[in-house]
Image (cartoon, rainbow, N blue to C red; front, side, top):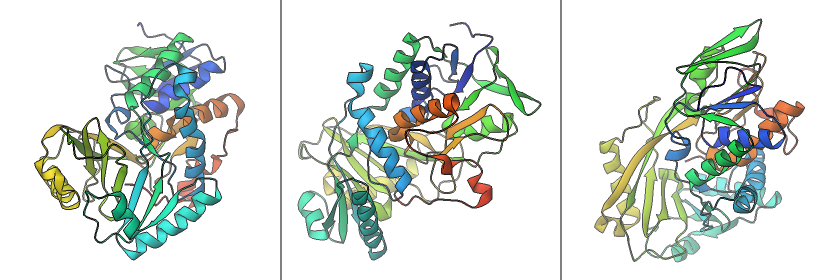
Length: 384
């Protein structure tokens, strides 16, 4: 597709945020939307390299509310968009192995229950009973919600993208943004390797690259990229069909079924910020050893695949929505590892904000860029 020379709205980033925003803006009747993706295929950045988990289990009211709106959108995705996304409600089981985490889990479950999320608080014995193949002698407590689960990220991105393009959105791959012209404090043009697009409205949905895009417009965005990696195993017949998405919270170690095998990942607490998306083989061994310690069956497994992706991390592990000091330069970024699951509602929220000047589905105005300089941070605890 040739790059249009003008657009009512330019969306930067072809992952779930950009695709959802494009769809919801087009659904509201916006005719001239240009979406720019620097990769050769959509959803190949952070969205395509995530573990595909979706959950209601968060520790702040706003993140729980985002899940309460976003996950039902995924549940009815096929009916609305026409794309099957393989939503598997296996449940998330978060495990606490020390008193601090156990006490926090108790408060989190109380908040979730108060907001209408039926998460269960489990004892250590109940955790062990649900996970007979795992070694959780030190489990003190757990939390479980059956409606949490996994979804295919690529299907969600392409579902939104295909539906948006049918409504006239011009989505261009291989279009890397290399500059943004700001005149009189207002956006004027986006420069790419394929040419320039004149516009008065930019949505920065570039995920881990959002701060780089911000600098082009003279906007400082406190989003840092952090590498996270995972691997999958070949079939393990012993794994039960209803094996949940298990998170050993203190170790940031997680497991879930992937086909007939497992997907296993772990956060490297010593990871330095950067854009390296190659697999750290040394840390993969650390991850493997920790996985075997919790699930001895992994020792007999063979690796099917492995990859790394980037989290887009903010200082309080909450996203950034809305305006900046540059008129027409808006943000939807900084989801700190849980953006994929909140992508559906976030795109809708940005369509409301851009077209109506306010967030209607849920008030996320407190998650603005200015909160960082004004000290209004809201810390999310349930980030792996």
